[in-house]
Length: 379
Image (cartoon, rainbow, N blue to C red; front, side, top):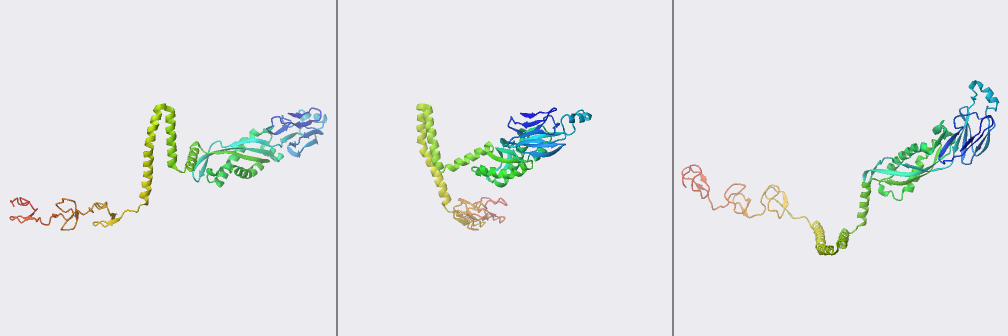
C-alpha cells in the first residue's frame, strides 16, 4: 500500500510493504511527478527515502516526517507548464527503501560441482542453504541495481545473488576442505568463513549479508553408498564372528518362514556350519603359517648355475634334471632312468657296452648292431 496524494494540492507521501518481500518502491508509481513545494514525506523506522529532483539524488531521509522543497508551486506551476502540455519539467520522485532483514532466501547448486576429494577421488557435490540480506546503503543500492524501475523485490535479484554465493562456495570448498568425510561438525565454521568472503561482493551493491547458513553438502548416491560401506567395515572388527552371526540369522529366518521344512533345512545348515567355519579358520591359519615360514632352501643348477629350489627335479631355466638317478660315465650329465644315451654328449650310458667296428669298412656301429650302418655287412 502506498500513498501519493497529488493534483492541485500538496502531496502526502508514504509507503507500506504488504508483501514483505519488496526491497524498493518508487513514488509516484507511474514515473516522475510534479512533487510540489511543501509536500510531506513520512518515513517509518524500517525505511529510508531517497529524494530525486531534476534527475539527481538530492537527499536521503531516515525515520520521521519531512517537508520537500521543489520549484513546483501549486496552481502557478500548471500555468507556467502550458508550453509543456501542462507537465512541469521540474520532475521529482521518491524511492522508498525497505531496511528490514529479508530472511529465508534460498541458495544452492543447480548442477553438481566437481570436487577433488583426497580419499574418494574426483566426485560431484550438491550444496544448499539459506541467507539473509539487508539494505545498508540505499542510494548505492538504487543506483546500482534498481535504476529507474518502479519496484524491486527479492525474487528479482535472487538468481544473481545465488550465483555469486555458489561461485565463492566452490572456490572456498576447494581451498579449505580435503575430504567430505571431515564435513560433520564443520558446517558452522564453513558458513561463517564463507559469509566473510562474500561480504565484499554484497557491499558493492549497498547490501549486507547479515547471515548465511549451509544446510547440506551431499555427494551422489554411489558415493554415499561407498561411504556407508566404509563405515560398516570400520564397525566390524571380527569378520569371522560377523559371518557366523549372519549365517545364524539366515537360518532363523528360513526356519520361521518355511515351518517344518524350514526347520529341517535350518538343521541341515546348522550341521554344516561347524565344518564350514573350521575350513575358513584352517584356511586363514594355513595362510598365516605359510607366510610365517621361511623361504625354501636354494641350490645352484649344475648346468646353468642359476639358483633353484633344492627340491626341484628339473631346472626351470635350462631344463637340466637336478635329481640324480643315472649319471653319464663320459660327461657326468644326470640322466633319466633307463636312458641308453646321454642327452648332452650322445654316448652310450653303459660303459661296458662298446661300439662294434665293421671289419669291412671300419665304421663304428652301436653295440648290439647286427648289420653295419655304412656297408650293410653282417657283423
